[in-house]
Structure formats: C-alpha cells, structure tokens
Amino acid sequence: MNTVTFPGLGLEFHLNRVAFSFGDFHIYWYGVIITLGCVLAAVFCVKISGQIGIKGDDFLDMLFFVLPGGIIGARIYYILFNPGLYVKEGGLDLKACLNVHNGGLAIYGGVIAGTLIVFLVARYKKISFPALVDLCTYGLLIGQIAGRWGNFVNAEAHGGETDLPWRMGLETAQGYMEVHPTFLYESLWNLGCLILLVVILKKGLRRFDGMIFLLYLVCYGFGRGLIEGLRTDSLYFFSTALRVSQLLGFASCILALGLLLWKLKQHPDPADLYMHRIQPAEEAKEEHGEEI
Image 1 (cartoon, rainbow, N blue to C red):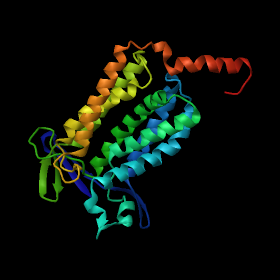
Image 2: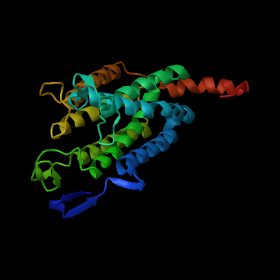
Image 3: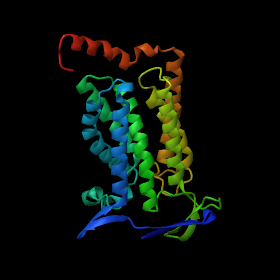
Image 4: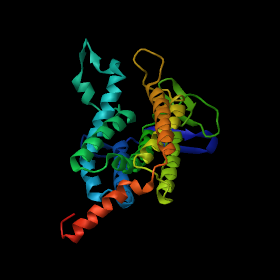
C-alpha cells in the first residue's frame, strides 16, 4: 500500500498496487491501466484511420505485432542502460531480465522497436509507412498519457524535492519527501501534444505523410528532455552523468524539427497525401467488382 499526498492541495491517496488476485497470482493496477490505455488508443485510431487513408483492419493487424514488440524493446532498452541489475558475475542474469513485476520498462525503447515494426508491417502490407506511423502516433500518445497514471499508483517516476504548491508527498528509501510529480507533468504534456495533433488533423493542416510523427518527436522530445532533468530515477549513459532519455529527447526534438522545417520549405502539396493517392485505386477496384 502506497500513501501519496499533495499537501499544498489538501489531497491524500491510499494506493494498493494490486488491483485483484487469484490465489497467489496478482493483477496489478499498472497493467490494468496500460491495457485500458491500449484499448482506448486502438478505438481512437480506428475511428480516425480513414482521415489518414489507413484501413482500420490494417491498423488492428499491426497491433498484434507492435504491442508485444514495443514491450520487448522497452525492456531491452532498460536493461541496456541499467546493466548493474542484470549482469551477475560476468554474465547476463536471464531470470532477472525476464522478471518485469518490479518494473523496468523504458518508453524510448518501446518507441524505437515499435517504429521498426510499423515499418516492416507497412512494407509487408504495401501501405505508406509515413501515413501509418502518423496514425500510430495518436495511439502512442494515448498510451503514454494513461501509462503515467500507472506510475502514480506505483508511487514512482517522481522528481526531486520541491516546495511548489502542487508538490507530492510520499515515502521513499530516504524517508518522507515532498517531490515534483513528474508523472503528472508528463501526462499533462502528452495530453497537450495529443490535443495539438488532433486539431492539426481535424483542421486539415497536415501537409505531408509523416508530419504528425515528426511533430510528436519535436513536442514530446522537448517536453521529455525538460521533465527528465527533474527525475530521480533516470537511466544514465553507461558510466557518464548524461541522462539517456534527456539526451535522446532533445536530440530527437532537434533532428525532427530540422526535418520538419526542411520538408515544409519544399511546400508539399496535400493532394499528394497517401489518403488521396490510395482513393483512386480503391475506386477503380470497386468499379471492376474487386474485393478491397
């Protein structure tokens, strides 16, 4: 049981990590929240898939590979930059590597692995990778928004000490501390990113396939870079003082911003979007009575 307070707001929560149990088998709230986030992401992406030119069925097919692949990628990334917990007597402790009950997933590893899988699925299905990854971006953000509340239940992913009015009080290995609720910062930042990207899609401001994904890298990378600097549980670049996610966040932001500006300077024609290119082909198939 974790007790989390917000002294400046007069709030107190008593949080049990376990949602329910079957004998000695426990279902944790973290997993429940992540699953709920995945369901909401899938429903939302299927709903807007037609606005990007991707069939809902193709997106759902992709999920069967992206979800497990993303989890594996997130775990490998965490192990790679936290070897002290998994290398025993000169060898890799496979049992520890497979034990995820105590956490140990890093979102950037999931994003990297997931993007690679999306690319392979797009190639296999012969659909536009930039368009498909644009659609997936919305689902990714919804999953990240939900996932940070799993961190809240676990009383983890918090920052250093602060006296700000919205500070969060909790028991740590160093005793009671009042800290930055960085889980909340990131969840709200991601919500703002999602709203921005939804508005861009709804207003028809998407100029080229891949634009949504690049905007995600710019916005999320910048926000994550700032927020990561406040956290106390960062992964570091091997034996250096560089925070991996902070470095990757700012680097991806700068690189994506450069690509975005370069592409926009070419004045891309929205008529070249995949959704417009695929429509004539589908209409031709319908005219010939072919299955689509």
